[in-house]
Length: 121
Image 1: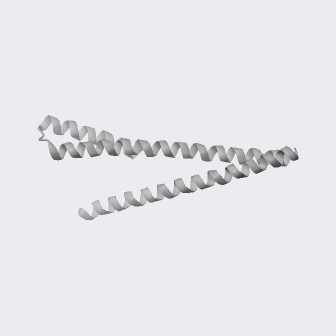
Image 2: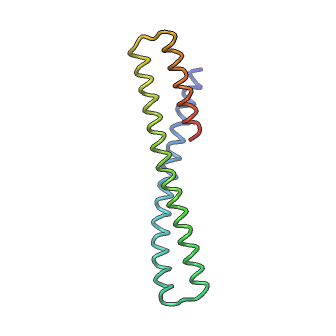
Image 3: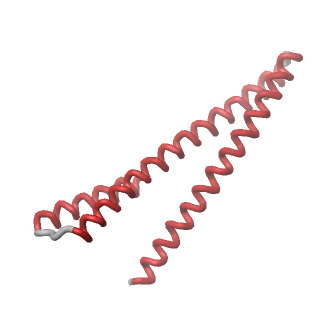
């Protein structure tokens, strides 16, 4: 059973590294697309042709999509931090305070609720 806990922690750490890598890639892509859109707009101002307009439109739309993904990822990250903070508070209470059966049931329900929220992220 201890091995399962280690695997869970390892998986969580790997997920976090993967998440951080994904965010780094999205940020780099956003910068690249921003520069590309600026360049495309400059070209468009010089030469208004249908292919140029379509290229600028596609680049701008890709940039919009990347920015939306970044915004969503940051929101998920913040929400995860809040939930993990609540788990740590429950853990502290379990360590520091005596618990009767009612407190146990309430804590159990709270942990289950937080676990479902975290899983849904």
